[in-house]
Length: 100
Image (cartoon, rainbow, N blue to C red; front, top):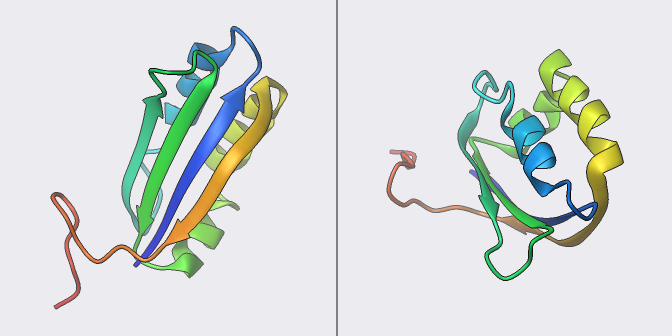
């Protein structure tokens, strides 16, 4: 499996709009096992995105999907920056099926 955890900083006052874009159209991403967008309770402009994929190749392929390209295009103006970006190797957990 392949995982990503990222902290995105929205333009001041645009966090909810950016969250809406990040959540729009994410239900049909082949290989995506989990995609969670969360508000940072300590920072009014911060968003945490946690992703689990069956492989790094699936994640890379998702970036060429029309719905994801559209979300990136619409969301880019609302992003002030990226505070953290961490790649992980998920090994399991609630809601994540592990390889047999």
